[in-house]
Image 1 (spheres, helix red, strand yellow):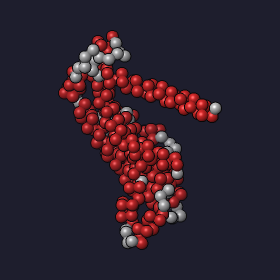
Image 2 (cartoon, rainbow, N blue to C red):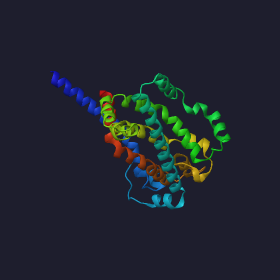
Image 3 (tube, rainbow, N blue to C red):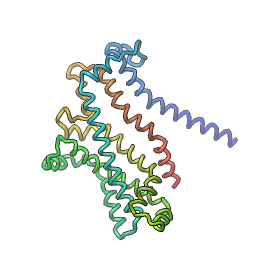
Image 4 (cartoon, rainbow, N blue to C red):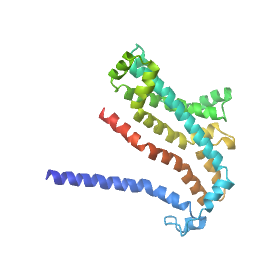
Length: 276
């Protein structure tokens, strides 16, 4: 009876997961297939496969719009922001987790306080401050906002993970004459790779998809990111839906590939954190 009940429960869980997967994947499937359709075909049969797969929308997006520029802006801003978040959060998390000093708990609470208030609530004073510094309508201003937004949770994750690593590793390395920088770079950081991947993905996805801060801080068309730039595909009176769906598909592709490449490390980091 116990085996039968466990089988029924596992079957119900698998069925629930399958239904959830269909709910999540089907809109993406419709988006991708619609990118190969004409406007007339999208309106006449929105949920069916295209009668013939045309690349006209892709050619129009690539040659007649500023999509390539928007894509390059998003790649550059996301890569720079994630790199700086990883750098600063790793250094701060390592110092808090691996060194004993009186104010370590206070320093950690200082970083964690940044998770309590969303940065969007401070958009008016933030805009005034960036405008005073001449950073409005610039890559640097947007990157600094994303770094400030991502560091608190990144420090929290890195500190928690680095605290679980055994101290015998660094103590033995010190006895062998290794410097503190060498210990961190060659011994600790390779072991913390799953946490680094979690931080990278956790910050890359919202930065890549963010529409709010580019809308407020970026005005020049050449500086727009993909979410903001895709709005130019929506006309006041008419919209070329095939082109729009193609742009959305291309915009989702890089971050999807990033997750696929790093998914093994991402899942490993989550499961290690759960066990520890």
